Image 1 (cartoon, rainbow, N blue to C red):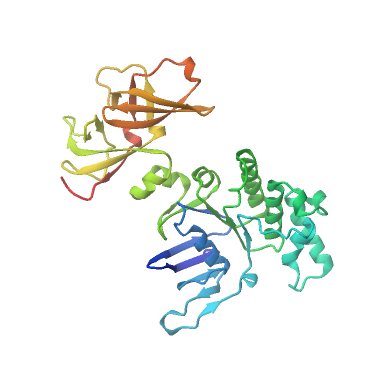
Image 2: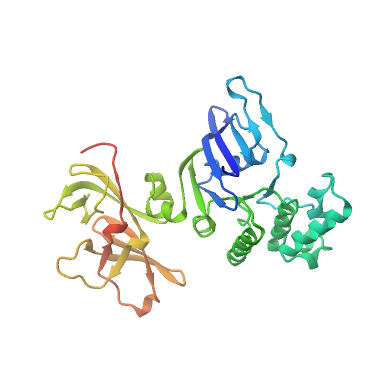
Length: 370
């Protein structure tokens, strides 16, 4: 049985004549997992998190934690249940930290522990444990204004874990930090997750963050779940066009599916090359289809062997240096592709061709048959 079970929760927000929110979300989180909710802005990630926390009341559905019903809309005449946030056994780390500026670090962490039947000694012990776990015990007497952004976020994390919650919710907690600090805190959170045995749900729109941190990813769009799986599953086998196009910087080509002389399937790209498709593509000759091509599936080449498949002439039209790699824009006929090239640009002669690995192409049949 899953530690946290979310069944059919939905929430509608009205904005004049327009309605947004969650259509239906089903999710199960196992003990010790770190699950990320990933998707574009407005897809329902934070609303889902706030429904689990008890900060937003769903219109329907149910939420259970370790077999205890936290919320139930009382469908089919049953009794409605809505446990207050402070009694749910859930910790939360907010995007804006939500710390008390007039209190020192110790009192900020202790604030959520008061009123729960704990003695002063118990509160002091739990605050010390939490602050030591985030390496801020020596800063316990400082005011929040005396801390850096990264330190403030660690105070917020210490406050969330101090009561030893069954689940910790993270609402884009690193989005206000600079790149290097964000990378460092990701590693700290992962280490805390492992050493403290946390169960966590992490909301983010950062794909690298979700891919690098998660046991599983819940990919969301327009208030619904598009796909749930491990990072490698979502990367290698996207369930639909949205998943293929959202995860990773992806090139697209559309055309007509045909059968080659060797009985392999090829895509005759509109005003472009013919591409050999993966052997198990869900298309057949005569279909119109779109192929999604990740940058990792494209390789720049300076020459082309006779008869090579999926190697087409290319012209470089742009290049942006990013340190470890350059983002190169190439034109193949009327098609523009983005490719990652490694090495310093001035040390390598310009390529003349691109190769697109058939095994890494993701193909979806277009709705209308040609």
